[in-house]
Length: 330
Ligand SMILES: [Zn+2]
Figure 1 (cartoon, rainbow, N blue to C red):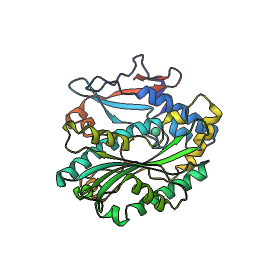
Figure 2 (spheres, helix red, strand yellow):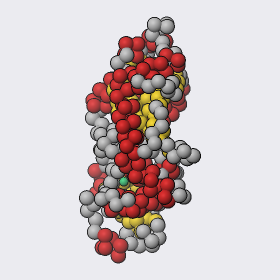
Figure 3 (cartoon, protein in one colour):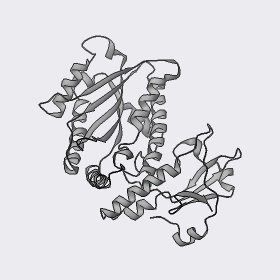
Figure 4 (cartoon, rainbow, N blue to C red):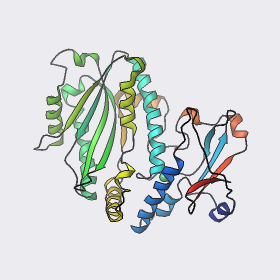
């Protein structure tokens, strides 16, 4: 539940617009994400979802602490944690990529010779919410099978996987796929007994999915020890991003949006969109990182957490103004 008093807050708003700029000079997209959140909560309202008003209250009042250098650090707010919420998903993907970064670093430290692969597994499109919900369960089940196949298992050190759903603009079908950052033993590249070709991956995935069609599979090798590690960074980013893009359900066709949000709410119900396995899971636990989906979305990285001294400073409070469609300082 949100703990701010609505009527009191509205009277307390000033004229100054919130500006939250990062050290690299980028403005944090509070307004953009909140505008999308408002549209999303309006769709939920029409669809008579009980959580609609809670979603609308997500990130409505933001309490920041200023740093000595003049930056803002988010200190307190209330997030709805709905799976489709654009505000929460923005926070989640920041948090996911920060956590993944730490996990991957810890694994590299322990297994410097390990190699990394980026695997994308797809399944046939789903037609509606029920179909999608079932399809996502099957996808997870099939992946759990795939990782146990002898040839996969023998070199597998660990993985991070995320499930993504995209909406086909022409057919309206839901495409479900999985992005997996795989960590394998160096042996994987040694010979044909260890190496799994693209064709073999496809055959194994087809077997795991128990389907008659050839599913689309993509496998990329992440180049090792490259300066700046750009490949592994972008693979981490890809695996950490939102499970559903807000542009897929906030189009200019409102009837379509209602249908898509209805389907996705049903389809993603009780689905875990990100998970770790093997050594990556162990490291995630050892690093004491909290839950990717249900954890704290206020502090998404270490850097953002206000120090004890900073917490002593007076708060800067920004409140969303529904009519003026922006955050104003109190
Ligand atoms: Zn939210």
